[in-house]
Image 1 (tube, rainbow, N blue to C red):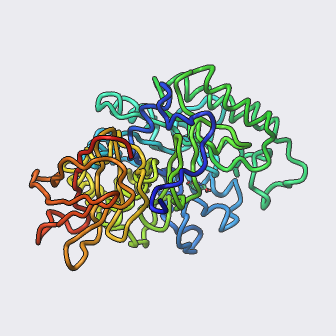
Image 2 (cartoon, helix red, strand yellow):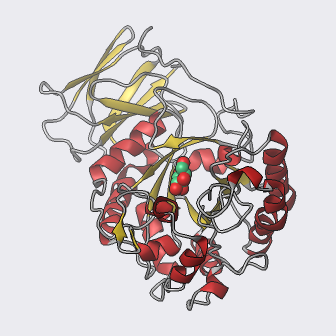
Image 3 (tube, helix red, strand yellow):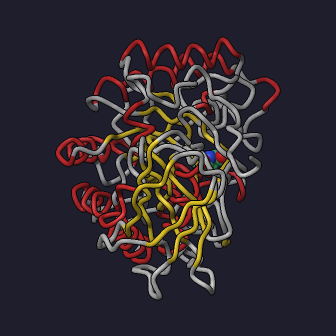
Length: 420
Ligand code: FHN
């Protein structure tokens, strides 16, 4: 039937839809928190008297700030109000199962105590603490997986790092020496000093060769065999697939994968961007991504003092309240065997189809087509109220109550026998 989903691409060797022991936690997690935090958070979109809207973590490149000057300005970064437990409490309340934080973004600044660069938070700022140590401890205590973002190719601070063509000559760079002297050793530090990690989230591989990408991936696996590597390690490698920023694939994708969004129009903190996605948008996006079989990792940009912006905290907490009631329809589910419908999307697990009703039709009747199983029982997930239904052949019609528990997304659990 046309309504049955045609699974898209299979990612890597994970054709078992992530059931392999290594990616199991990841494919079950469904919701992650991305954090972009560094000296750019202190600038908040404004540097040397100029304002830049969006991607504030790129401010050094957009402003062509000389590396020396950026280093001087970065000394103003002093996130004295940072409290790892507070962040993890918010993450927990939001219902995320993992956190990925920038350990070094393209500006080259290490957010951890590194022996391989002075340009790190302990040596180059008055803050002096290692926030990743504190975050690792808080995550461990809360049972949340921790991953580190690491920009392995772009490093605008280093003469041989990728990306900085305003201070250095891109044509004469010795990238191999950059990998050898900074990025590979820092990866070793991250995997050695912060306990067990869930992910090393590489990004923008630039002109890395296949051998170089493989070297980074192997390094991670050698030091922590269970640590997953993002596909942005480059050259088709990685343990799971990351789609483009703000991209949701058009249909089902089997295997371990992630859609990556940010809460407003920037990854790093912006002092003047208030374009935050509402809880409604987050909740519906989460359902859509899960219905295609993936995770949603949504980013927040904490500010230069170390605080999570108010709207981010509030909207993530609100998402968490929805998940408390409806998490069964998200966590541990797999993609829907039946395509998106005018009223919403579906997620599934053996014997259960979760109907995420996003738009209630006027007559209150919704159709689940291409239903090759036998419908047994239907009820609202939140509150348990039974829902009337009628199956004729492969069509299941359900009659919604006059008022649904949540206008953003009300879930109906449809129990069935047979196969979909
Ligand atoms: O250039 C980065 C960007 O600053 C941000 O970190 C995003 C997050 O996925 N990744 C890169 C662009 O794809």
